[in-house]
Length: 346
Image (cartoon, rainbow, N blue to C red; front, side, top):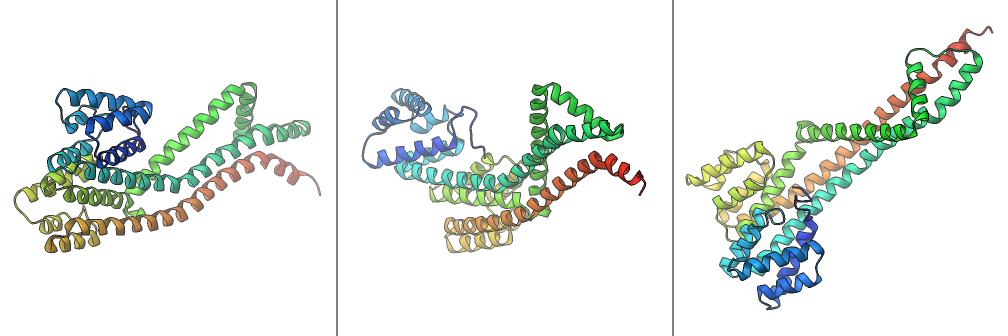
């Protein structure tokens, strides 16, 4: 789930909009008056959204139809839940549930981002240490070698040439540092994404998708949406094509009349053993949304545990890599000095 949509409306702004609109509607104000009130006191983007919604409502559109005309600001999920709320007369309740759902998704996303902040800091700090060696320590040793008549060769000569170029072109040094940092961050992001999708991480990515699926399916079922339509809506919100394809297969089984516990049992790649057990219990007792919420709680606890283990693994690994790189550069720089000292007579 992307934190910022293409139209520039952040998820946090959407959460605020849905929650405030739900509160105003609960107070008894009509929808148009509620949007007018939000337009007066909201942010610039929210004011523009409220104005457009009012114009469409005055032309006879429903709120769901008006939101559907703002695809860069309102998701398909929001449009669906608002339509269900208008049909059932529980629009305020559905808007509040939508705000709660997005709030939890945002909290989970921020939790993951905080977990990888320290490894990223280590990566950037390593680049800083390398530049420190090149721009400050290496010139001192180069002058010492020149005074002793030592002619640098090989990798050391290349580093000295790079140092001279960077010192003569400060702007180039800044650009090189930025480029190197960007390349390392990009490579680190790709490596982290591969690692989170692999079995080495304990299927972290799959567990993240499972938590999202359970939370969203529970929300839709509690809102009165049918199971097949709910699974179809969830599928449209999943950006992982492989997982979405598995959900389509699950939905095709449900559409053929297969019970959800049996359909889920045939899609073991989608669900963990605990989630599958909770789905079966919920389906047999008639408390499927509640059991899905229990699955979400258990899944989030497992995510936190796995993130803790990943941090324990990644931080020492990054420190080790940085130490090896820096030690290698240090050996290259002071290697001629050791050679000269060893060649001196005792």
